Length: 376
Ligand code: ZN
Ligand code: ZN
Image 1: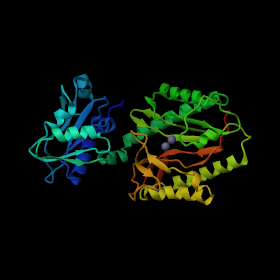
Image 2: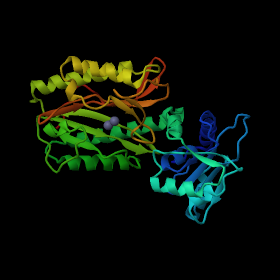
Image 3: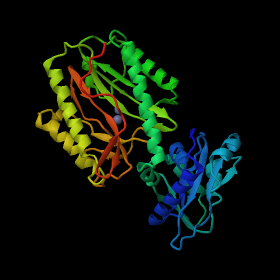
Image 4: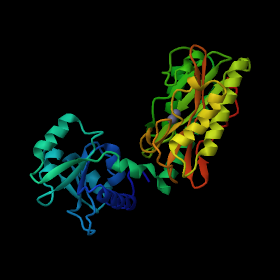
């Protein structure tokens, strides 16, 4: 599969979404965000809009699923968007064309209040035919995306393998004495050469005290020997992201404290992994790993959530954190498990794997070893 969702998957997703819309009493859902558009229609271009028709109580729909784009994408949309959508090439504004041609005399139009700008919302209110009402509907598509199909898991697995391979090659070439930035650039270059579209996010390469910043930006400073080095990286491949973090030692002469913190984070990560399965909530899984770090007196140095969903977006549903809701994890969720301990001015350790939630456990997709590895 090269980029576009196969027509079959898109049709199946649109059908599941139509059922979800019925529960929300939404007749038509407006979809504009590129990732949701790609997920539902397979379209990978930059300018498109879909109107998804929800199931009515009697099983019928108000109108067909529709896909709108401009002439630049006439050929591409014809190839990518399945026939379950009526495809339309629009000369003017897509939003005008969509709002001006809603089916029937009345209905409820769902929109994504988390992504639609205030200006576009105002415009939409002005365009809406009388009898139609706007209904906030954020999260409807994201809910579907959170549970991955086997094909999607295969693509995420491939992205993980690609990213692992790229990092191995970078480490083999040596990192001590090179700048953090140079290592980050080489890592991204190798991922692209191995077939990635891009890095799934800007790589983090942070040595010594700099690694105490969870989102450290790589610097033009050389990586010294005998410190901890955190690398957090991922590949975007066929539309799907990977995400992994490893912390290495750049020599044997790292301190006792650094080894102790590393062992602690690893223990928390392993217990977190052991807790991931369908059933418990993201909050409960977070608590398992957090408890290990709390018990060691380092709770205040683990300030972020245990993990997040990963898919077409690098951060998506569900979350593993203290503020995650009570919703149970579901088989097919793909989440990171990434505890960290950050001692300001001193060091930072984070260890992250990407896993597929299954009944009774999880499958780990990232494969690099986790015992403290010395690199040079
Ligand atoms: Zn990460
Ligand atoms: Zn992550």
